[in-house]
Amino acid sequence: MNLVHLAASAGYTTPPLWRILTKSGYFAGLSGAIGATVTYAVTVRPALRTPGNEQGDIDVLRRRSATYLAWAGVVLLVTGYLQLAGRVARAGKGMPFGEALTPGNIWDFLRTPAAKGAWVAQGTIYIVQNVVLILASAALIALLLPRPRRHLDVLVRTALPLTLAVSLIGAVPATAPKDAEKVVDLVCGQVHIVSGTVWIGGLAVLAALATTRGRLSESAGALWADLWRRFSLVALICVGAVLTSGLWMSWKHVGGIGQLWSTSYGLFLLIKIALVLGMVTAGGVNQFWLMPRIAQARRSDATASLLHLTLRHFPKVVWAEVALGIAVLAVVPFLSGSARSEAGSPPAVTSGSVITVGAALVLTLAASLYITARTSDALARRGDPAVA
Image 1: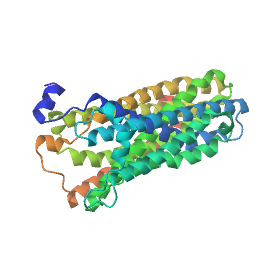
Image 2: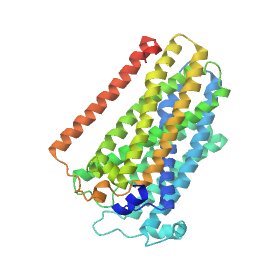
Image 3: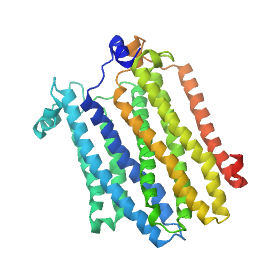
Image 4: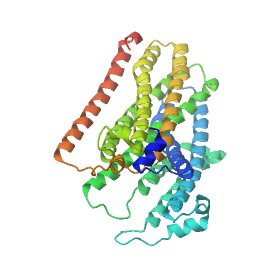
């Protein structure tokens, strides 16, 4: 049974093309802005400030970082506007997406009075969100100009909290949550989005920076070894956050293993899980195979080998991760509704046993990530890459 027949039989509605493009584009814009600002702040900038790096290498990576961040701001601004127009089209009764793009219809939507029982109008939340989005985009787009580019670090520190706030503000409910479970749903949703955008966006910006290898010195391998090492820790944290929040959301929307292939929502979720596991596997290759070899080359001062590993082998795996991440973003718009509702299953009910099982899974995941980091370090210290 193909997806079309399954969708028809289960009452699943395939989103229109404009919805697919606007939602995927919006998350791509968030990934570009959040991932680039966070990665620059916690990975690129500290590595560039490490003593011993060639000034020419620093200048090349700063210029490329500024250019990437500036265009990330452009993409965020455009995709943010299209996402807002998509909200207008969904709110209106049969309003075509083309009409929803007009500023007049958008303004009318934003001025809609608060619903009964709401503490604030939904349009007000969207106004605040998009004002913050414009400020974040402006801070990044300013890097296209020569003078602001000299203040790259300041502009990134300004844009970073603003880009995070774009996602967080958009998740604020207009009606106060009725119970703690709703709050957990909101928190897990934002943890999933922010950690996922940092992971995918961070991989993309580092892959883009690695294309400057032709302009870097022979000693740039040590700098890139530091970059990959720092980002590996960031990626490990993001993986843990994505999987932990994903477990909660999957349980909320899927009532049983069989619903993963008997419902449209479940099939798309299964595709997303496979893609994420592919990213995790590629990251494992870097963690267990390449990082120990990089550490060994760095200890033995093998400049040519270090440069080859950090700017030839490593980026190839990272580009594969980026491709899988883009595929994940393409699947996201299809995850509407839930497998439970399609299958006629009752809503998820939190109980003591569910919390116990969930806590055990989270602890197991945390332990596995800790073991992963420690094993990678141990392989690097042994100095024999064959053991990987």
